[in-house]
Image (tube, rainbow, N blue to C red):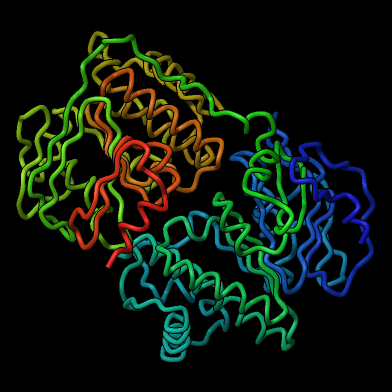
Length: 536
C-alpha cells in the first residue's frame, strides 16, 4: 500500500516521516485508517500530521515517550477530542473525525485510568455502557445481564463477586473488569450490527497492574479478537510486550510518527532509540543533589516480621544502600512497604530505624522517624490528583509557608517550582492541575513531594509502573543519586526484574513469604532472581 512507502524498517531510524502524503487506496484488510491527524493544545502541538493504519487480524503496538501524542491520538479515535485536521476511513468508508457514536459502536477503548465508577458494583460497571438506557422505558434484564457478565468473567479467569463495589477490588482485578466491559461492548455492537464485521479494541497500558497469569488472559483475548477478524491497538511502555504480542509497531515522538515496522524487524534497543532520539543513549544526570555529608542517612532493620503473606522476614538496609525485595505474585513483597511505613499492622516482628523500634501500625511515628512511602497507585494513594503541583508539595508541611499567621501562596509556588525544576517535571508549571500531567511526570512530582522532606528511609512499591522508558531512566537516576548523596536507605519492591537489576545493591528473593536467597553486587541478575523465585 502507499502508506508502506512512508514506513521504515530501519531499526535505528529516527528521522521524522514526511507528513504531506495522500490517503492511500483502501485495502480489504483495513479496519481503520486515520490520516494526517493534527491537534494543538495552546502552545503545544500534541499531534502533527499523524497517520495510522490498523488491519483486521492484527495487534498493532503504539509506543512513545510520555507526551509523544499516544493518548491524544487514542482520545481522538474514541471521540473524546476533536482534531484540528485529519480524516478517517472505517471499513472502507470515509469518515470525519471525531467519529460519530454509531461509528464508535464497534470500537472499545480501555483507558489507563480504566473509567470504573467507584460506588457501583462490578456488574453495574460492566453493563453501564450497554444495558443502561439501551431500551428506554423498559427495565434492565438483570438476570440476563448477570449471566452474560458471569460467563465472560469465567472465560477470562476472573473470580470476583459481581455485587462487590469495584473500589474493593485489587488493581489487577479492576483492570480485568475494564477489559471484560470492553468485550461486552464489542459483543453487543456485533449483535446490533447483525454482521460479522471485525471490531477494534484499544488498550492503553492494560497489563501495568496485572500479574503474569492475568496478563496471559489479556493476550489470549487479543488473539481471539484478531482471529475473528477484528483489530487491536496496544499502547504499552513494556517494549518486550510489544515485540512478543504485536504484529507491527508504530513509534511516535514529539507528536509525529517516526517509524512503523514489523515487530520482527525491531529490537527493544532500536525502539528506545526511535522513541527518544539522542536521549536514548544515556540516562540523564540526576537533578537531585545534596552537599556531600549533608546527613548520614538512616539504617533500617526488620526482625521476624509476620504480616499478610510474610513469614518471619528479617533483613537490614545500610545508609545509602538500595535493597530489592522481590518474588512471584502473592509471595509478600507487595505488602512489605506498607507494613514498614506503618500503614498496615504486622502480626509479629519489629521494625527499627537507627536501632529505635517503631510502634507497629503507626504511620505518623514512621513518618516522624524519617520513613516515606512511594505507593504503587500514585493517583489513588500518592497524589491529590485534582489539585495543582504546588498544593501537592505544600500539603506535606503547610507551616513552612506561614508568615504572620497567613498562608503565603507565593512561597508555596516558588518552593514547588524549584523542586519541579530539580526533578525535571514537564511542564514546569506549579499551578497546573496534576491530572493534566503525563504518568511519568506525575511520578516525578510524587518523588518530589517526599524527597523534599529529606527522608532517611524511602520505601518504593513499583516506582516506575506505567511510565515511559525515558522517565524510567530519570527516576532510577534520581533515586540512586539521592541514596548516594544523602545516605538514605531505600527498599524497592518491584515486579520489574530489569529495574531491580538496574537499581539494587542487594536483592532478597521471597517464596511463600520467606527469604529463600540473597543476591549481591554482580549476582543481581534477572535470571538469577527468577531461578530463586521459581525453585521447588
